[in-house]
Amino acid sequence: MLMYPHIDPVALQIGPLAIHWYGLTYLAGFALFMFLGTRRLRHVPYVQHGWTRKDVEDILFLGVLGVVVGGRLGYCLFYKPGHYLTHPLEIFAIWQGGMSFHGGLLGVIGSMLWFAHSRRRPWLEVADFVAPCVPTGLAAGRIGNFINGELWGRFSSPDLPWGMVFPQSGSMLPRHPSQIYQFLLEGLLLFVLLWLYARRPRRQGEVAGAFLVGYGTLRFTAEYFREPDAFLGLLGLGLSMGQWLCVPMVLAGVALWARAQRRPAMVGTG
Picture 1 (cartoon, one colour):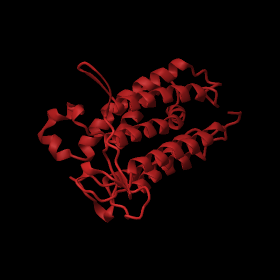
Picture 2: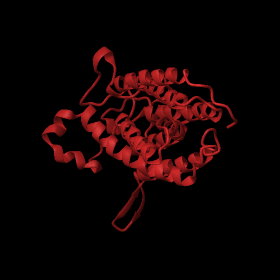
Picture 3: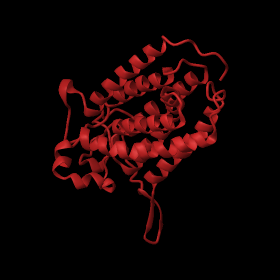
Picture 4: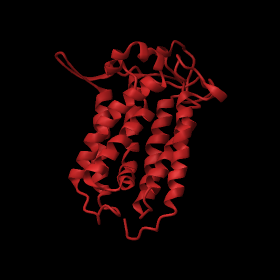
């Protein structure tokens, strides 16, 4: 049984300025997106269609806006609609915490639609470009969750070698370090699988569909080890809110991938 190491969330303090580890993990995620995005430019069809580094920079900028706006609105809508309906100004209090991945995903989809329209590019081509570059950012975010000592897991067997006590949870019983599970599953594993899949020429929509199915399935699995939000608990069929939000995500991914099979196969080398 392990003890949570109580990592100071502040990485560097310079007078009144505090630089938090969580913010640094976001910066790491953005840097990884830029690195992978420039590598992605060498893949089919982007190398033939004249994609440039400026496209990657613009997608990153719009994606950050989509994550912040969509993530916050998604949290307010999916997790605490009643509270924010009666306290609408608190929607803007992002510093109080409360972001939703699924809301952020919707925000990114909206920003990618805007990018595709402004550049007159097929939206699915944009989505296929972005999808393999996302999981490393998710992995960085889960490391930030662990450093902050938040989003801990459900109780584990005392015999589990990596079972961890999170005193901030109000209990001294061992729990699953679910932040690490999600780091490994929806972060590293999804990145490796999706990057290898996307390296070869794919029909338009296949990569984006694979991301939706892959993330939704891995997140659904990891949620069995993650403590549900105290104010929600488990919902219908004993599933958490995160799991229920993954269901339409997986279905949409299957539909998108299946629809892509009707398109002509892409030729070329990645």
